[in-house]
Length: 385
Image (cartoon, rainbow, N blue to C red):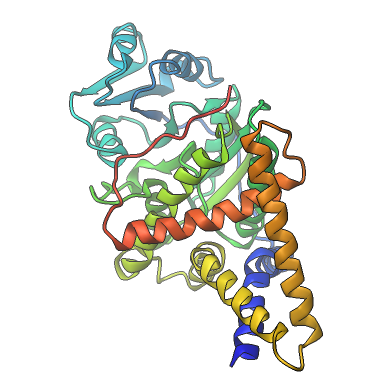
C-alpha cells in the first residue's frame, strides 16, 4: 500500500510542476491556434476598484489618462469601495476631470460588487478591469484590445510584471510569474488560457454578466463565463503592467490563502461555473489550477510513504532518494525562512521557501474555506517599495 501511495503521489507532484508544462508545450506546438490580432480602437471603459489606495490612486488615474489611446474612446471609471484612508478626498480632485467618472460607495461591499456597479454605467464596447496598484505601460491598452479583432476572442489578459525592488521574495515571485506566463502562452496557443490576473483583464461588454456577490475570484469568473459562451480567453505578453512584489513571504501567503479559498469555491460550484462545453479548457483547469490545490496532500503522502519505505527491510532506491531530497528541500526552505527573518539575501534558498510557504498557504486556504471563513472583501498584501 505504501509503495502504491509513494508512486502515485510522486507522479502527481511531478505532473503538476513539470509534466503539465511539458505536455501543454507539446500540444501548443502541435495545435498552433493563432490569434488574428490587428490594430483596432473600440470604445473602452477602464475600470479601477479601490479600497484604501490613497497613496497610489492619483498616480493610477494619471497613468490611465496617459495611455496611448484616443481620448474620445476611453473612459476611466474609479469605484471607491468604502475606503477609510483618505482615498475619497484624493478622488474628489478628479471629479470634474474629462474622461474620468468617480463612483463612491460609503460602505465596503467587495470587489465584485464594485466591478458590477462600474459595469452598469460603463459605455464602452470593451471593459478593462485593473487593480489600483497596477501601472500600465503607455502602449499596453492598444496591445491588449488588438486581440479582440479576432471575433473568436472574448477575453484578454495582460502581462503582470514586477518592479525590481528590495523585497526579499522579489526573485522568487518573479520566477513564479515567469513560469505562469510561459504556461499561459502555451495554453493560448492551444486555444485558450484558464489563468488570468485581475491586474489587467479585458472582456467584451456584450459578454459581461454581473459577478455573484459571494464570489471570491472575480477575474476567474470572467474567464470562465467567456469560455462558457464559446469564446476564447487569450494571454497578451506585450500588454504590460507593473506592480511591486509582496513585502514578505507572509504577505504573499495571505494572497495565496484567499486564492486557494476561491478555487475551492469554484471547484464546489463547478456545475454552474465551469465551461463544460469546452473539454480542453476543463483539462487545463484540472491540470493547471485544481490539482495544485491538493499539492499539500500529495506532498504529505509522499513524505509519509517514502519515510515508511525507508524504514522497511527492502527500501527501494527511488524511495530513499526522494526521502533524502525532501529532507534537503525542507532544510533549504528553513534556511530561507531564517534568512528572511534576519533580512539576509535569500538567494536560491528563497525558491524553496517560496514553494513551501505556497503549499502551506494552500492548506490554510482549504481550512479557511472548509470552515466558512472566506470573504469577498479582498485583503491587500503589503507591497515592497
